[in-house]
Length: 126
Length: 396
Image 1 (cartoon, each protein chain N blue to C red):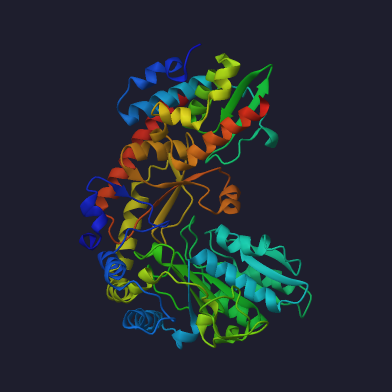
Image 2 (cartoon, rainbow over the protein chains, first blue to last red):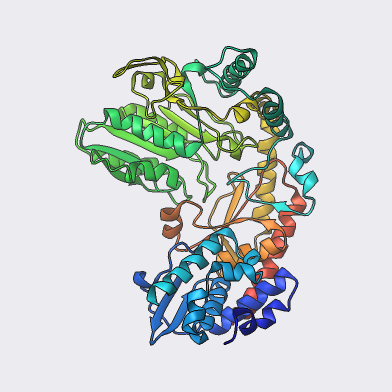
C-alpha cells in the first residue's frame, strides 16, 4: 500500500518553499473541478479553516472543495490518499503523519488547525 | 526610528507588516522587562520589602505617565491594568450589566472587532438588545443612523453606545467626538475600543465611560492593557473579585479598595508595567513623527495598489490597507508572502460580520508602524503582483 509521501513524491523533491506552494496550488487547481464535487452546504463545512473548505463522503470516497487553491491542494492530497489507503492506513493517518514527513512547516498555525479538523471530519465518517 | 526596535537587527530579511495585530517591541521595553525579570522580580501591593516597594512605585509611576500623556485626571482612580482590550471590554460589559435594567439597548458599530461584539452578544444577559449602527459610504460610523435608531426606541430605556475609534479592517477614523456627544445627549453609557488609535494618532478620550486598549499594538508588552473608566464606576462591585482588590475580607464579607485597583485582582503583568514609563515617554516624544510616518506609508501603499488586481476596501486614514484580491483567496497570498518572508494578516481579521458584509471570506491586510520602511511596502506590493500572476495562471 502506497504511503502519503510516495503518492505525492514530486512535492518532496522540491526544496524552495515557493516551489512547494506552487506545486500544492497546481494540485489544487487540477482538483478544483467545476461544478464542485461536493454540495456547498453548512453540514459539509470543515470548521476552523482560515478559508472555506467543504468535505463530502460518497461510497467510501472523499471529495473536497475550497475557496483557496492552497487549501484545495492540501485537502485534495489528503482525500486522494484516503481514497486509496487501506482501512489500517486510514486509521493510522493523522496530523502527526504530515509532521513526520516534513509537511507541517508548510502549514501555518491556522491551517494546521484546519487540516486537523479535516482529518477529524474524515475520521468521523470512518 | 527602526534602530529602536531590536527585532530588525536580529531579523534583517523579515518584512513585518502585521503591526495592526501586534507591533514589534521597543528596545526600552525589552531592556526594562529584562531588568525586572533578572533583578527586581517581586509582587506589588503585597510585600513591604524593598523589591516590593520598588515595583509598587513603578506601578503607580506607570499610571501617572499614562495619565499625563493622555490627559487622564486622577489616573489612580481611572486606569485599570488588565490583560488587554478583550478583557477591558468584557469587564466594561460586566460592570454595565450590574446597573442595566431589563429592556436596555446596546448600540454597536458594524465595524467592530469581535472583542467589542462578543461581551454583549454572548454574555447570556437577557437584559439588553443589540442594535447595530450602520456605516456611511466612506466606512465611518454613521451618526445620523445612530441618532435615528436611538430616536425610535421607547423613552426611558437604558442605553449603551459601544464603538471602535479606528476599524481594524477599514482603517477609517470614526468621529468619536460626535458619537460621545450623542451618548451624553441621550444619557447612554459609552464604550470606546481605542486599540487601533492609542499611540498612533491624536485622540481625546475625555467624556467616555470606558476606553480600552492593549499595549502590544504600540510597541509594548503582550498581555497587558488598560481600561480607563469614569470615576463613577468605582461605586460598582469588581467584576473579578480577588486578592489585591480588597482592604478587608471577612468570612462572608469584603471591603474593596476605593481606587481602580479594586478591578485589578490577582497578580498583574508587572514585568510589562515596569516597562511602561519609558515606553510612554518615547511614545509621547515621537507621537507627531509616528503620525507623519503612518500617513506617508499610507500614501505610498495606496499608490502601489494595482486596482486591476486588488480592490482596496479600506481608506488611507491610518496604518493599514485591506485588499480583496480579484483572483484567488487571500489565504493563498499570505502563504506565498510568508515564503518570501513577508508577514501580513489574512482572513476575517476578527471582524467577521464586517468582512462578510464586504462580500468576501477573507482580506489581505497590510499594516505598518513606526519602523516600517518605504522599501518594505514597495517590495511587498511587487510580491503581491507576482503572486497574483502565478495564481491567475493556475486558476485558468
